Image (tube, rainbow, N blue to C red; front, side, top):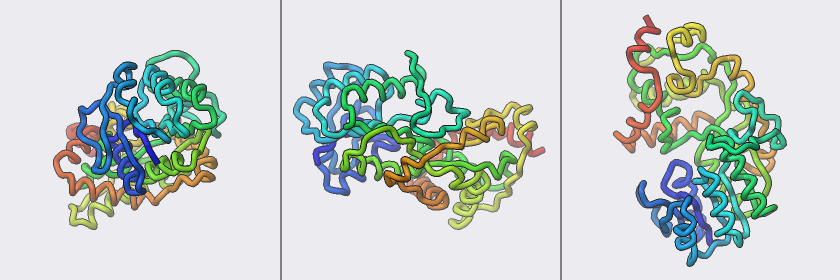
Length: 325
């Protein structure tokens, strides 16, 4: 199959490119050309997706049976893609759960929950607008994958990598006391494989693309991190639960300072995501222990770059010392 990827060098998009090549597809990746080359076996073309003339020139000679769009960050990009790629048999658009008007805090009860419908440059409204524009152009040839929290190897957002980075340093570690809070993630490798499936099979419609609610808990995630690091000779560490009241009074920023942590009032609904459609359409969900192990293996192999990504989030050392004292 002649597969065009919009993106091909990032966290999700590189994983999709590798998966598509491994299946024998003829893969072209359209990128800006500023963040490295796509994987071996992928033909690269370069354009700014927000520039209609550049996009038109870049795709003019590319054979396109299916598109996987992982770089749709503006309304203009959606409009240009809808016009220039209108002949594609299948269009898979990576949207976001942020397209849902009421998430967070949620819950998300199904794909019919309301989306943002006003003009805005904010992330969620842009994703919702992209879905509307592409739906008008492609109809039942469009699948909108409303991705949840993506984790796994090459994760440069600094969330799971931040916990692994901190636990690998050992010692007493401040963690939220909400260790029994159910959570849900999607491994980048599972999502990438499923997106290629969707392009191959011509899946259509909106799909909330994340793991099942309660696939792990906050405590389960942290224990998996500690056990994975320990199994490779990492130092001993002690998880020290800190109450929400203490964390907030100390100025701890939810999600940023303690990745994946949300105050209880938000967390009790934000993780309640209905994923029956995703399960029916075959989106896999590997155990969190496998995701953590794969991420840690990548971090050890990647070295400095991975550890720098792991420092993008996390408690400042002086704040953690204060909490632990």
